[in-house]
Figure (cartoon, rainbow, N blue to C red):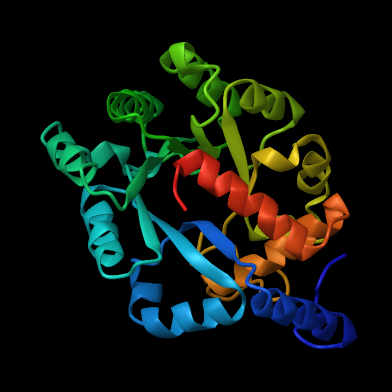
Length: 285
């Protein structure tokens, strides 16, 4: 299943399939990247060209605080195929000022801004108090309600609490089909059921390609095709066979390949599925 090496017959066969996808007009969207980060934006044109050669032709660049979100918006304004989500990462929550919310509301008036995020909870790092993370999470969930935007949720070692907070905040939107994305999904079957019942999509990143990601790969079996998305989280989480390097949108196809194998479908079929999901969630073509 895994493309462990950047060479060999299996890798070459995959590249041939990818070339055929390009020729036939299929493509992928990287639904969670940080193209505006210094590691990527300094070489943005080359990165975009490399991504297009790998049939990756649309990007959602995701902000992590006020200044960073503003950079993301500015980048998207200059590229037709780059869209934006604005928000405050849970580990940035301690820096949020009340006055910052006005700036976020101004950004949300921009048509390139499709979502609010990434927002959520992170109990892995532990350098921002949970009560502050929760307060900011709720502020942005309220903002999503006000502007009728999907949310992109960051969850690290906080699944139960994330679900509790969203359950209360989004209770009146529970049956909507576009509440948002559980980004870089790392939950279990109970969280999958919760997400499916409440209009969330689940997005998978490069870590699903790792040989030891057995539990994550098992989750794919329980997620309907019409709730799947893929992402890089670039510059982080480079997939096999590029693990350990700076990640970039071109590599999202290796996540796609792994999911296609797990779902026993071809890349072209998966491309169609993911594109339909993206359009449905964000009401965009």
